[in-house]
Image (tube, rainbow, N blue to C red; front, side, top):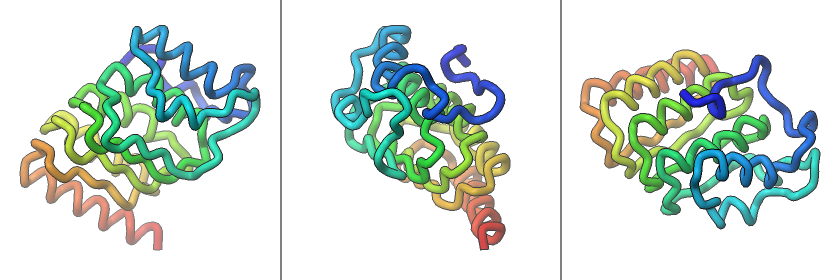
Length: 168
């Protein structure tokens, strides 16, 4: 996991940042040598202390790729109000999912994630299983049209059911 994806103690809050979310995202893109995603860039506030104006981030059908997800995760990490993430059809592979898990296991509000239609398999499935066990607030996980095997799919669905019970 790169330094950009490692959690830093308590969950980061945008209000404590000295840069805007847009600046943070653009700098992370430069560091990862990726072009900023224009859809995301247009939604990011350019003023220090401002957060995303939504509780969901939908980048579905919008190619992000493995390296491109790292800067997105820098925004997710600084957006504690986010409850839903849609990364379907983003060109993600196992390593991107593992990086996402590293951030989301500490996220205080996330409850729904969609990683459908990405080329992910057992490694990502195991990471997602770990995430569901560590962050029991997650009660909805979509992983349709992936290479995650049937046994692991069943384990993920069982853990989601357990998390839903805990949520009441």
